[in-house]
Image (cartoon, rainbow, N blue to C red; front, side):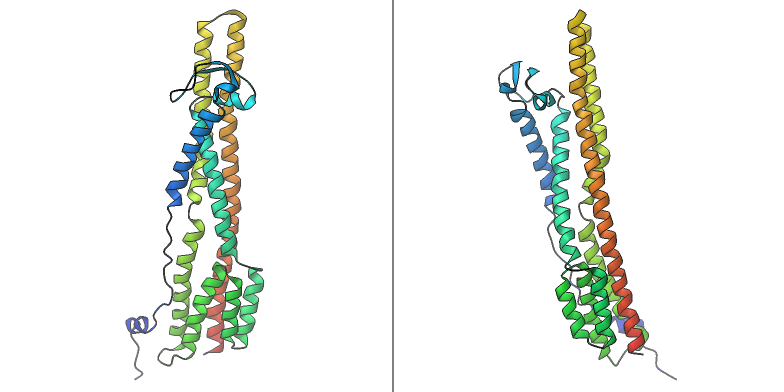
Length: 287
């Protein structure tokens, strides 16, 4: 009777060469905090500068009173304390857009992913694993990293005489899955900020508008005649700055989130195809 090799023994003899990537994600809390501080400073000292208003108290305090803004940007200051929060949200979105763009460009690598996989398939069909690994080094992306990890295990399994073909294919598949599990989280990291701000920014804009309307109608009740109508129209205009800023920030977040997820889906598809290529190639060439 043929001796059956235990699964535990196979796992022990087929060790993974994939090593976890240790990268700090300090930007996930430093960037938003910094952006909100910059947002407040810009609102308080730039657009809220006394030089931008004809009336108002001197500089001092957390939220100085200002009146009669000179120019559209200065009127944004009169939108209230929600404005610096929305500016902070906008800066946070821009920060993570740049950060994710650089990460995804690096993960995409060089050249076309489909063309890269075809080159690897050609080299494997000719049993030239080293040339296939060299192609991975040229690709320099997530697909190339996963493929390279799989190819190293592929090369190891060619010379392995203790496992049968099915076990070797499973070992290659496991290596690809481990490499994939390390690559994908790096691509999706920090996208949660874009998706969250996409929802929250609009609500913050509406909150700022409602607060501005409350102040406007309060001022309306304290005055009368033509002056009341003037203050009301001015107050409504100032309140709507919150809505415009909130909707604009939300729209930018949604657009960039969808762009990045589409790019990530393309990379994920390339990774899946690379794993399928390795297992099918080995199963057909080394029976």
